[in-house]
Image 1 (spheres, rainbow, N blue to C red):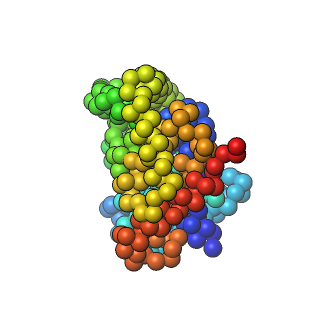
Image 2 (cartoon, rainbow, N blue to C red; image 1 turned 90 degrees about the vertical axis):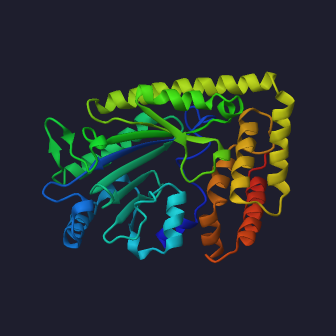
Image 3 (cartoon, rainbow, N blue to C red; image 1 turned 180 degrees about the horizontal axis):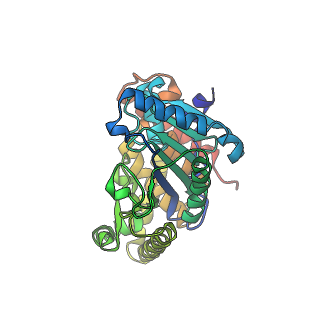
Length: 356
């Protein structure tokens, strides 16, 4: 029942309209890679060893819900349908690679969805913490709390020289990957996004369109590339500072659009809002482009009729997998999905209409 509620929910507490700099930064994530001593990495382990890894971690996490003060959903990936796994991918609670139906893969997801722990992907453990807005320190603190809980109960692979041992050398050291999701329509419209993408590797960052989302959504993921030779605090601080600069560039681009090309931009915003409000059929790619313009209009104060939280719910509820699961029919045609999407979008916009 808890898993069904998780899959049906159209809200993610860590994504959307709240948090620092939330007009640009939609979410922050910190992921820690950890492995047990004395057992091979999952890619080199046999079935018996994978089962042993899962059993050891399962026992260690027995009281995690009590520690975090909320229930933890325990999900065996090989017990889910392809559609159910797809919904978890859409919600960014598991990766596409992790969702491959391989034995002894487990996911532990907190009731508020801000913590997910993946067992037997590339590493024995991947602890993922997600928070709204630009809040990397809060995400790291939450992940560290789970890490400390686990380390008190399991012997983790650690080398005094290299740090935490991981399946991929790029994760050696802290085992930490930090990232943020940004909405960057201003930089896209002013054609400055390529400058950000091309220069970011020079300062150890990766910037690319958010995977699994159409480019028309103008969503980008920014993450650190290196984990060895830096402390956790340095990595968080460096990424936080770099994101702050990109946020400033995005706001300047939005301000410029308010003076140059204002009529064309506002026309695009209102056309998008009108289509979303009245359309009877929307493809997923069309939807991504329209909802990005609507969000831009809300953030710039062009659209005052809808609360910002509408975007946070629509971006989850209007995905193909979620619509199929909500309709309890994974065999819907493309036309049927588009019709259901339009209906859901209209309903959510009505739900978040402002008064007056």
